[in-house]
Image 1 (cartoon, rainbow, N blue to C red):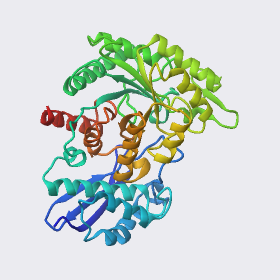
Image 2 (image 1 turned 135 degrees about the vertical axis):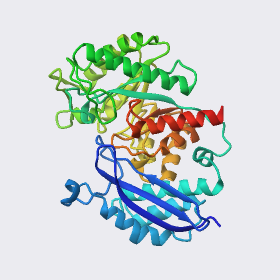
Image 3 (image 1 turned 60 degrees about the vertical axis):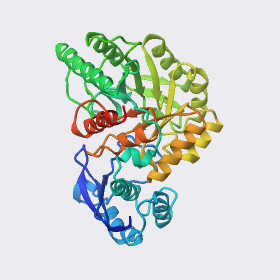
Length: 413
């Protein structure tokens, strides 16, 4: 029988050297599923709560309270449960917590258990995780969005915009997409060296040097693409994650770009983006406006939805209720999916399915504080999301996702 025998939790470190949770789910038949959860630096206001100890150890970032909740509450409730019934497991986890934002047990505790159970179930069935989650679907390999210049809360530089990405949309296989990303990344590194810019990196593995303005990184990316031997606007495109909530002042309804010392209204910032789109091969903008700026988002969508992909992250936070509001208000045309924003695998997949039913595109995403867990790579394939964000093509916690996708592509081709 596929029953849960035991659940164990431990405190491990994420890619920023801060604590997070790892859980192991043991079955009576001997299989084990292990999963760990990431943590974000740039968090949406409406994300499920990541429970921290707020005590002296680890500068308040310890997760012993969340681990205690797993060992004393969650474990007792789940022992004997059929691990193949993911929906019932997640429903029980939600019921045990009893809050809207999972603040009692902690979304980090709940998600770690949810994902570990899915891994144990896939092991019990003798199936790869993507196959267990996706069933007999014809699988689609995702297009990777490589964040190779970091800014905002992900870096210690002067950029207001948080992520500058290259997108190998015009290249056929994932294997070749990854090669292109790596070659452009290292070409950019050489360009920065020649121009005596720092090649230090940010949280997501991209370069984190200073620039003269927020547009300059786009020029560097185009230069790197061309010097690497690729064609910008045909093989390789650009994308940005503005993370605009981080430079929005709601009282004044103003966006302040410190690097240029500019205060902009929503409309003026949209004009800013439109100018970039006209001059660079940008195909996607994530969080172009703030999570509270619904009217601005409506205007942004109205003006740019036919030109590019508009990704909602902070405004939706992988939450069906907020996505429904966005659909009603005709906001964005794509949703970013981060399992730790909502807290269970079932809710994550339900949000993905709801987005697809309403013709929204889907992008699976990592967090800035990552672990060596490749779960989101399998999730992207299992759900036919078509797009994935996992950072620059370097650092183990990023590369493990890309390497897993290489393996999956070999299996399904």
